[in-house]
Image (cartoon, helix red, strand yellow):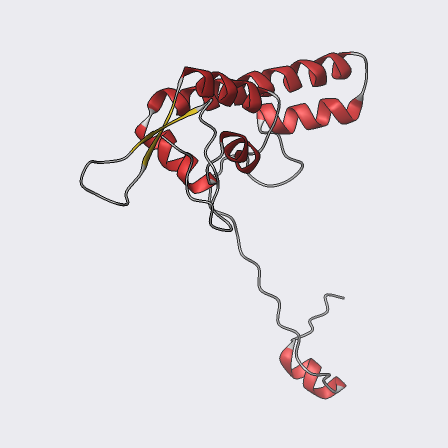
Length: 155
Protein backbone atom coordinates (compact mmCIF):
# COMPACT_ATOMS: atom_id res chain seq x y z
CA UNK A 1 0.00 0.00 0.00
CA UNK A 2 1.43 3.43 -0.85
CA UNK A 3 2.35 5.88 1.86
CA UNK A 4 -0.15 8.43 3.12
CA UNK A 5 -1.03 11.38 0.88
CA UNK A 6 1.49 13.97 -0.20
CA UNK A 7 -0.38 16.94 1.25
CA UNK A 8 1.72 19.43 3.15
CA UNK A 9 1.90 18.53 6.85
CA UNK A 10 0.88 14.90 6.34
CA UNK A 11 3.41 12.43 7.65
CA UNK A 12 4.45 9.48 5.56
CA UNK A 13 4.45 6.36 7.66
CA UNK A 14 7.61 4.31 7.50
CA UNK A 15 6.67 0.92 5.96
CA UNK A 16 9.75 -0.61 7.57
CA UNK A 17 8.02 -0.25 10.95
CA UNK A 18 4.33 0.42 10.29
CA UNK A 19 1.58 -1.71 8.74
CA UNK A 20 -1.43 0.24 7.45
CA UNK A 21 -4.92 -1.23 7.42
CA UNK A 22 -7.65 0.44 5.39
CA UNK A 23 -11.17 -0.81 6.09
CA UNK A 24 -12.87 -1.95 2.90
CA UNK A 25 -15.59 0.29 1.54
CA UNK A 26 -14.29 3.39 3.34
CA UNK A 27 -12.15 6.12 1.88
CA UNK A 28 -10.83 7.20 5.26
CA UNK A 29 -10.19 5.59 8.60
CA UNK A 30 -6.70 4.20 8.14
CA UNK A 31 -5.49 2.10 11.03
CA UNK A 32 -1.80 1.75 11.86
CA UNK A 33 -0.04 -1.19 13.47
CA UNK A 34 3.59 -1.39 14.60
CA UNK A 35 5.36 -4.51 13.31
CA UNK A 36 8.10 -6.50 15.10
CA UNK A 37 10.89 -4.27 13.71
CA UNK A 38 8.96 -1.20 14.90
CA UNK A 39 8.51 -2.69 18.37
CA UNK A 40 12.27 -3.29 18.58
CA UNK A 41 12.84 0.32 17.47
CA UNK A 42 10.42 1.61 20.13
CA UNK A 43 12.32 -0.21 22.88
CA UNK A 44 15.72 0.89 21.60
CA UNK A 45 14.75 4.55 21.23
CA UNK A 46 13.13 4.58 24.69
CA UNK A 47 16.28 3.00 26.16
CA UNK A 48 18.36 5.67 24.40
CA UNK A 49 16.25 8.41 26.02
CA UNK A 50 14.39 9.66 22.96
CA UNK A 51 11.18 11.63 23.31
CA UNK A 52 7.82 10.24 22.16
CA UNK A 53 7.58 12.90 19.46
CA UNK A 54 11.00 11.94 18.08
CA UNK A 55 10.11 8.26 18.17
CA UNK A 56 6.79 8.81 16.40
CA UNK A 57 8.55 10.85 13.71
CA UNK A 58 10.99 7.96 13.16
CA UNK A 59 7.98 5.66 12.69
CA UNK A 60 6.50 8.25 10.34
CA UNK A 61 3.37 8.87 12.39
CA UNK A 62 2.05 11.62 14.64
CA UNK A 63 2.76 11.31 18.37
CA UNK A 64 -1.00 11.22 19.08
CA UNK A 65 -1.30 8.28 16.68
CA UNK A 66 1.57 6.62 18.53
CA UNK A 67 -0.28 7.09 21.83
CA UNK A 68 -3.38 5.47 20.28
CA UNK A 69 -1.29 2.56 19.03
CA UNK A 70 0.19 2.04 22.50
CA UNK A 71 -3.36 1.65 23.83
CA UNK A 72 -4.43 -0.76 21.06
CA UNK A 73 -1.21 -2.73 20.88
CA UNK A 74 -0.08 -3.63 24.41
CA UNK A 75 3.25 -5.00 23.13
CA UNK A 76 4.17 -1.50 21.90
CA UNK A 77 3.41 0.03 25.30
CA UNK A 78 5.39 -2.76 26.98
CA UNK A 79 8.37 -2.15 24.68
CA UNK A 80 8.23 1.57 25.55
CA UNK A 81 8.05 0.74 29.28
CA UNK A 82 10.94 -1.77 29.06
CA UNK A 83 13.12 0.76 27.25
CA UNK A 84 12.35 3.54 29.73
CA UNK A 85 12.99 1.18 32.67
CA UNK A 86 16.32 0.16 31.17
CA UNK A 87 17.29 3.83 30.80
CA UNK A 88 16.24 4.51 34.41
CA UNK A 89 18.31 1.57 35.65
CA UNK A 90 21.36 2.75 33.72
CA UNK A 91 21.08 6.27 35.11
CA UNK A 92 20.54 4.84 38.60
CA UNK A 93 23.73 2.77 38.27
CA UNK A 94 25.75 5.79 37.14
CA UNK A 95 24.44 7.93 40.00
CA UNK A 96 25.02 5.16 42.56
CA UNK A 97 28.64 4.67 41.45
CA UNK A 98 29.23 8.42 41.68
CA UNK A 99 27.55 8.64 45.08
CA UNK A 100 29.70 5.79 46.42
CA UNK A 101 32.80 7.69 45.27
CA UNK A 102 31.72 10.65 47.40
CA UNK A 103 29.87 12.76 44.84
CA UNK A 104 27.31 14.37 47.14
CA UNK A 105 25.30 15.90 44.29
CA UNK A 106 24.79 12.44 42.80
CA UNK A 107 23.89 11.06 46.23
CA UNK A 108 21.32 13.79 46.85
CA UNK A 109 19.80 13.42 43.38
CA UNK A 110 19.61 9.64 43.79
CA UNK A 111 18.04 9.93 47.24
CA UNK A 112 15.42 12.32 45.93
CA UNK A 113 14.71 10.47 42.70
CA UNK A 114 14.75 6.85 43.85
CA UNK A 115 14.06 7.09 47.58
CA UNK A 116 11.67 10.05 47.63
CA UNK A 117 13.74 12.06 50.12
CA UNK A 118 13.06 15.79 50.44
CA UNK A 119 14.66 18.66 52.35
CA UNK A 120 11.37 19.84 53.84
CA UNK A 121 7.76 18.86 53.90
CA UNK A 122 6.02 15.53 53.93
CA UNK A 123 7.36 12.72 51.78
CA UNK A 124 3.86 11.26 51.50
CA UNK A 125 2.25 12.81 48.39
CA UNK A 126 -1.20 12.20 49.94
CA UNK A 127 -0.40 14.06 53.16
CA UNK A 128 -2.21 17.32 53.72
CA UNK A 129 -0.12 20.43 53.73
CA UNK A 130 -0.75 23.45 55.92
CA UNK A 131 -1.63 26.69 54.21
CA UNK A 132 -0.41 29.86 55.86
CA UNK A 133 -1.94 33.16 54.86
CA UNK A 134 -0.32 36.42 55.86
CA UNK A 135 -2.22 39.67 55.49
CA UNK A 136 -0.28 42.92 55.61
CA UNK A 137 -2.43 45.93 56.36
CA UNK A 138 -1.73 49.52 55.52
CA UNK A 139 0.65 51.30 57.90
CA UNK A 140 -0.89 51.96 61.31
CA UNK A 141 -0.24 54.75 63.76
CA UNK A 142 1.17 53.76 67.15
CA UNK A 143 -2.25 54.16 68.78
CA UNK A 144 -3.95 52.00 66.15
CA UNK A 145 -1.23 49.36 66.47
CA UNK A 146 -1.56 49.23 70.28
CA UNK A 147 -5.36 48.87 70.00
CA UNK A 148 -4.93 46.01 67.53
CA UNK A 149 -2.22 44.19 69.48
CA UNK A 150 -2.61 44.16 73.20
CA UNK A 151 0.81 44.51 74.72
CA UNK A 152 1.23 42.98 78.13
CA UNK A 153 4.24 43.32 80.33
CA UNK A 154 5.22 41.00 83.09
CA UNK A 155 7.45 43.02 85.37
